[in-house]
Every structure is written in structure tokens, then in C-alpha cells.
Length: 283
Ligand SMILES: Nc1ncnc2c1ncn2[C@@H]1O[C@H](COP(=O)(O)OP(=O)(O)OP(=O)(O)O)[C@@H](O)[C@H]1O
Image 1 (cartoon, rainbow, N blue to C red):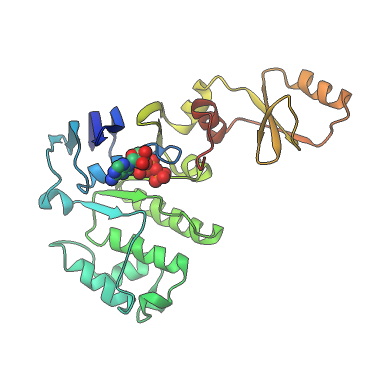
Image 2: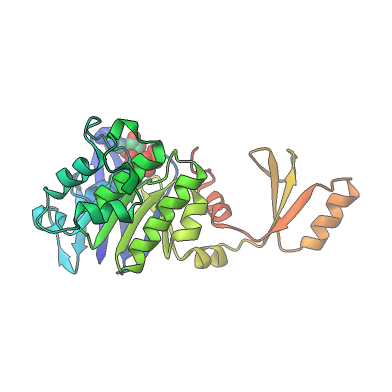
């Protein structure tokens, strides 16, 4: 569906993408993860045709693409990291306006139903809640019934319920055989939704694979999470994390020094990410 070979992007002397390659297959949710400044938005916006690459090859639907033009834009949907809309227009007026930019696509009424905003049809954009606004933006990104959907941090800033609503929409879209390219700051989101994950750091890809593969290949064993900050493990958000292949031995050590407040769990994508980049997503 999308193939990228040795993509580079320079901003002046600064090389934001240092030759990245990856492939996105049809019908999958492909997530791009990385700390702030890693190069996620640069990559997604080059693919959307909003920024120019410095060098490298990009293929869409098996064809080499030099510039993402009108014909391709008919087939892709885009949800930007931040969307500005006309605040005085109503929800249905906004959907109709965006529909008019494309030759083919959904009827705006259908999109209202897909994103569950029927009751807000005549509300002005300025009166929507954060979650409703983001659902409208999602609706706008699929208005042309795209084959590929690019979502740049679609759930940032939403409460857990609104986030789940967007996840349901993404999964519904995938069930229709569409391809989704997602960037996210939320590990849980990437682990729950993605078929494939690509971790990028400092403009380079540091790991690619399904969430399970990445966890399996990480070499990480069991994780013990202890409440409180101690110097014998890695401290993350007030907890001390120990990675071990011998859980019983570690547990005995902890009990011997009087520590009882801990849990043992399997490694997650977040542990893999921390190991590979040495940073949390928001560092
Ligand atoms: N227009 C620009 N001019 C100069 N430097 C830029 C420009 N856009 C991005 N950069 C730099 O390129 C690097 C990658 O930025 P990019 O926005 O792609 O990262 P990101 O992974 O999307 O980060 P975030 O998670 O914060 O959105 C950063 O160091 C950023 O400062």
C-alpha cells in the first residue's frame, strides 16, 4: 500500500529524517511511535503531501510517487495533529463543505451516523466538546471514503471515554479493509490497535514489527514494579522497575529487605520503547 525507501528530510543543516525505510501493507493499522522530535510528523506530512522530502523513494499502491497530487489525495484521508475549523458553521455544514472538496465520497449524513454525531447535526462547531470535535475531525478525514487514512495523534488530550470512541472508529474503519497509518503518544493505544509498529528515534527507525514480536524480540523477561523510588531499578513515575529472568530470586530479595508492595507482570510495548530509546514518549 505504502513503501518508503531511504527517506531523508533536512531542515537547513539539521537532518530530521536520516534515511528511513518501511512498508505498510493493505488493511493493517500501522503505528509510528517515537519521543517528541523523533520525526513522526515530518514523516506523516511528507506522505500526506504537506512537506517535501529531501531524498528517498515513496510508493503508493505500487507506483512511485514524486509529489502527492490531486489524484492521490482523492484516495487518502488525513487527520492532522491540530485542526482549525470554522467555529460558526454547524456540524452538518462543515461535513458538507469538506465533502465538496472531493469528487467521490460519503454522504455527509452517513458520516454523521458513523461518528455518532446525529444529535449534534445542527450544533455550531464552537459548542462541541473536545471529544465531539475530534469525532467531527475524524468524520472529515473519512469524508472522501479513503483507502488509506493518516491519523496524527488522533486521541491526544481526550478523556478515556472519548479516546475509546475514536479507537472504535479506527477499528470500524479497519474492518472495512482500509489501511491506517497512525502516530501516537500512547503506548496502550499502539499496543491495543496496531498490527505493525515502527519505533523512530532521532530520525532513525530503531525497531519494526508487530507489538508481540517487538516484545518477544526485546529480550525483556518479567517485570517487577515496586511502589516507590529505589536505586536498584529504573525509576519511572514514582515506581521502580526491575526486569528479570528469575522472578522468584528477585521477589525473595525484596521480601528480605522488607519490601512487599510490588506487582509482577509481562513486559509491554512501553517497556520495549523505554529499553530502545531510553526515554518515555513525552520526554
Ligand atoms: N519546519 C521545521 N523547521 C525546522 N525544524 C523542524 C521543522 N519541523 C520539524 N523540525 C525539527 O525536526 C525534528 C522532527 O520534528 P517532528 O515534528 O517531525 O517530530 P515528531 O516526532 O512529530 O515530534 P512530536 O511528537 O513533538 O510531534 C525536530 O527536531 C523538530 O524540531
